[in-house]
Image (cartoon, rainbow, N blue to C red; front, side):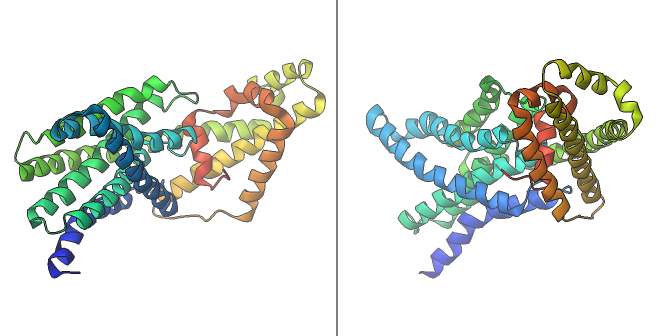
Length: 339
C-alpha cells in the first residue's frame, strides 16, 4: 500500500466515524447502546451493496447521462433504501426521542458512506487528496446528516403513535432526497459545498440534542409521577375505587376470572418496569448508571407469560391504561427487553 493511500484512506473514512462518536458522546442519557449502533452501521453498509446493484440496473434501463442520474435518481434510491433501516427501528420501538433518532440515522449513513468511500479508494485511490477531503468531510457527512434529518423529522411526526401511517415518513424522506440531490448538483465549488453542509449540520444537531434533553427530562418527571400513583393504587385498597379498578371490574363480564387476575398482574408488572426504566434514565442524567439485574430479566419473562395468558385482545383492551405510545414501549428496551 502506497504512502499516498495511507494518507487518503483516513481522510476518506475517518471523519464520518469521528462525527458519529461525537454524537454518541453528546448523548448524556446514553439512549443507544454501542452494540445497537454497530448493528445499524452494518445495516447501512449492506444497503450500500444493494444500492450499487439497484443504481447499476436503473442506469442501464434509463439510458440517461450519468451526471443527471447522480443528481436525480441515485439520491432517490439511496435515501429510500437507507430509510428502510430507520423505519424498521421505529416499527420495533427502538427509537424514542430525537437524540437516538439522530444517532441511529447518522449511523445508517455512516455505514453507507464508509463502504462507498472504501470502494472508491480501491477504484480511484490515486485521486488528488482534495477529492478525499470532499468525500470524507462532505459526501460521507452528507450521507449521515440527511439520514439523521429523516429520522428526526419522522420521530417528530410519529412519537405519539403506535400504529404509524406510512405517509408520516414521507416528509422526512423528501427532505433527505432533496438535500442529497442539492449536494450532488455542486452549485458551489466542492470544498465550499462541503464546508456549508458541515456549518449547517453541526448547529442543527446541537439544537436537536438540547431540545430532546429538555423534552426527555419533562417526560420523565410527568410520567414517573403518573406511574408511581398507578402502582400505589394497585398495591392499596384505593385501586378498586379508581378508574382503572372500575375498568377491570367491567371486564369480568367479557373475560374469565383468571384472565382478569392476569390483567391486573400484567398492569402491575408493566408499571414497575416502566418506573425502573425511568429511574435508570434519571440516574444517567446525573452521570450514573445502574446495571440490569436478574430480577428485572425475570420480570420480563413473567410479563411475556402473562401476555400469552391474556391474549392480544386483552392487551389491546388494557392499552389505554398501560401508556402504550411508541415512546412508552421504547423505554422497556432501556432495560434490555428481549426482542
